[in-house]
Length: 337
Ligand code: PHE
Image: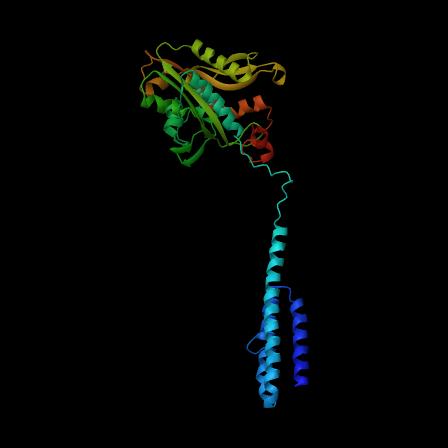
């Protein structure tokens, strides 16, 4: 019996030692299996009682059962301890340092093209123009024919066309086809501006992109003259470039206007007052009016087409048009307002 008690005490001492060393739930579980499980050391010991002389069994059994209860109680305490520890650790790990500066939210902004398009269309809307948009995939009929540029006309060389389904379906090379589309579908008076993407089969460089925007303008009514065109564009230039701007019209050629002009601005604030061309314009050609169903004896009008990227380049001092659609945040972030 004494020997039995000694053994049980040794077993208990070893078990308690190991229990202290069990530092995570898995180790504790293994410990339970080893000592208290169905094949565990204590269970085996209880089974071994039958080998003792009958009179020694009760005392030995009691000692063993006590050891078992103590171990069970110790395991329960250890489990609570481990749970507390892991909770403390989690709280430590996830501690919020409220003294840290906050992370600034990522803020988007408008693309420079959008900014300038809104400025342009906004100006013309205040003059009573409507903003309309047209198809980017266009027919040869509208992109060329209706603009007095028949097949074989040398003026087609001015537009490096991208075809979708040759010879009739192409990417529009300018927004001017909307002149014809608008006139076909409405009666005068007409006042529209047409912002939109255009495409050309073009070698890219600092001033040429294969995709770019234009804003077309068209005003048709009885009695519209070249003076209206000049006044409108001069007011536009003052709006975008300030009151010190000077404007200049020179002869230019576009088959769909007569006369045709190019329009330049000069201000002391830009490139030392050099003349900078910002758009093409002119009086709508009588043939274009007639093809669209307007009577050229009764109606006259003017049209213009400007490149908003060019205007943005001047206004913001951007040196390369390829920056607009290069998706480089270092460029785009400069326009956050
Ligand atoms: N569509 C012409 C171009 O792309 C510009 C323009 C528009 C000229 C309207 C005159 C009148 O170059």
